Amino acid sequence: MTGGHDTDGAPSTLGKSEDNAHDLDKCQETALRLLDASARSVRDMQERLLSKGYDPSVVERVVGNLIRVGLLDDQAYARGLMEHCLGRLLGARGAERELLRKGVPRRIAHDAVQDAEDAGRFAVAADELAQKTARRTQGLDRETRLRRFWTAGGRKGHSPQDLRAAADRYLIDES
Image (cartoon, rainbow, N blue to C red):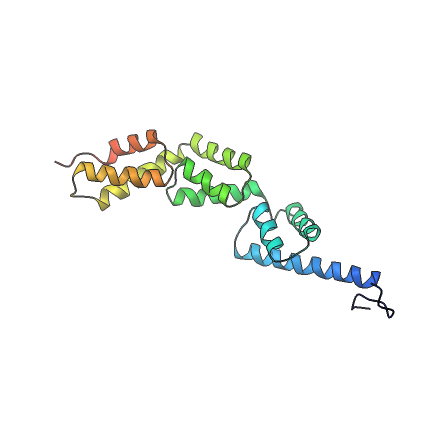
């Protein structure tokens, strides 16, 4: 029986296991399509599958399988997302905010930010932001240039120390 009921109308055990296997296959197919579109955190994958109406126990099994085969890995996802954040010239606070927003567990997000901080990658991003701002604001007075740089750096989550050092190097008085 594929309808899920015996001839007397009672639920069929055979139909139920076929339904569960079908749900598991559909959920796994959906998860793989989601991963094909972009990398995801474990939490994001769980939320997306649950929002599509899959049973929590089915989602748990599918996500567990994806973790086991290495297709879902929060640490690898955090490293890749950190590269993306640095490419957008985000600072430590901005990068951590982005990782958390994307579902990376707090401890993993903090560790990824700390690794980038220890390697001086946020200072480099602040320097690049200062160079970009210096080119865009060439010819304007120093106060305006600094204000625009500090505003952009603050929005991107840079530390005041990194911004001050970058401003001293790249936003010098042109007069």
